[in-house]
Image 1: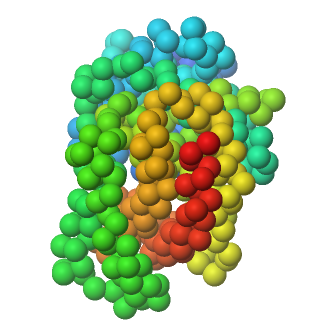
Image 2 (image 1 turned 135 degrees about the horizontal axis):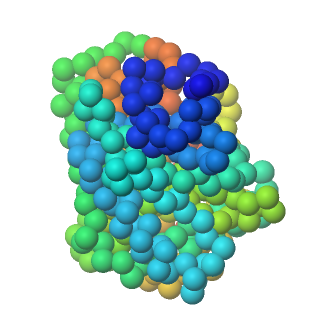
Length: 363
């Protein structure tokens, strides 16, 4: 008998999915897991095993097969590399269907895949410098592990991802067709105009050859890091956005997520702070592992990366709000607007620490 511990949106295809991914287990429990804004992810528990079942959002990922094949490539590369560099490293493997396939496509056309479940300590807020150091060290290990991978073999799962000038173009087109008089909208528009002239900094550095591309995670936010019971960082999950990109995208997004102790939600009236001590600890741990991947000139762009990745997310939240919340999932009307306001307020906080961030990046 299948038990669903809380309402989920897969009831119509549930039995077929289970027959594909665990056909010999009639008694299983399914619960939603994680707080992702994109895909629907569930933990399946049977008497014999636990595994992750995930529906890939075709609305967000236009070619779900690219996400699936990228995962296989990155997992195979990590398998070969971890022994010499990070034997304690953990990463998910694919759980195949009863027919040995990497995915199942249901009658609605949705792509489903299975992955091994990695038991881990959930960390949503970094409460100590040591936690920040471990998280930075973990991201550095990942970048080191994939640094020798041929990134050209990876598909681009999200064309234009992290290319800030393109997000600005989309916003400009959207603003012409959609206006908003809601509280917070004016603030968002003013923030966008204030920082518009900085949007191409990373892309110009890439074009000039100062910054170069390599395989990156694409979404190294705090809840995608795996910690063991001792509090040591041992891996990263959610490889959907793995692609060829700038290390600065990952490092900037990581610092954005981890140094905002209040998180992305929770209301716009609360205090927003950028934790500089956590920032220093993350950079210290990161460069201990991946310092060799950065030239002195590349390090000089880390402040820009933190600022612009935060600005980018605010811009994406606000644009999605204007078009009717097509990309990011919401729990209530106006949530993406609220998220945008929080990110733009965080941009203001980051600007206060420019000199300190630049100094920390040069250590």
